Image (cartoon, rainbow, N blue to C red; front, side, top):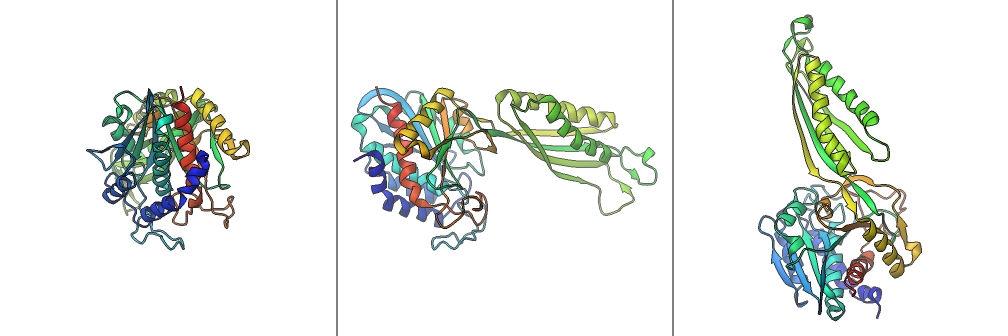
Length: 394
């Protein structure tokens, strides 16, 4: 049988696992029930399994029959603090929800492990299966890298692959060489002046005009200091000053927001430029600024050669009509970037809107109405396994 046919033979078990996880979602880094389900699903495959120390991760190593390099396949496991509002008979009732498809990621990666374990004799090298908590809430990928997932076989992996389900025409894969998802930073600023009476602003140092100028200056900074071919997005989402009284100049104003970049160069520039810009504007108004600009995750960048090869391999396995080249980086963020920062990697998408919904209007990820068709689990498992098999050919 072909890889795809073998994968589809696994569908009943994979769907059952996915639905068990969907009905019982867990948040953040502590996923004891999900971890236990993963370990149970991998039993009998002859894998070397370890659990995380700082988080409820699972790392499973498959040793190939022949010597060679190592490849990593990753699936994230955590859910979101969203009350599910679907009509699924296995929907979550706990106030948490797999609204980003991580339940499918887990089941699909288990499927890839079963496919590859059955082909151990064909493997010239080893496979690391990375089951990761804390993609949504927490720093799961970074912690797993720190705990040694990239060196789990004894040598550093030479390639890594991660997949994400998204709305769209069911069964379509897509990726692109180079930047694929943005890095994310979180910005918080407290501007401090001197309080006073609203009728006598000249006796005060009003932080509100300084904060307002900072908001507009950040937009000008993006358009005048960064190339449109290396995009940066700065969005101020919080702005606050003053108390209940309309005739009081308070001494502080607050703003916060999100910064997105798609290259390490842009990341370095915003880290240097944004604090300097804010401090300078505050000082020009006679104020001071306390600035926090924290990196949530760096940009996710696909290795160019691996990305081109992945597009070709997916087209070979599933047909060219089911493989699209993503035209531009997605400005959302993904902590698989902590893997792609260290080793050559490819991150790709699989569209999975159920047949009864219009892919153009289907609810997006991270909403209480998000729906994913778990009939794509066979293709998901086959895609991951095919990429690993190809990488481990002599």
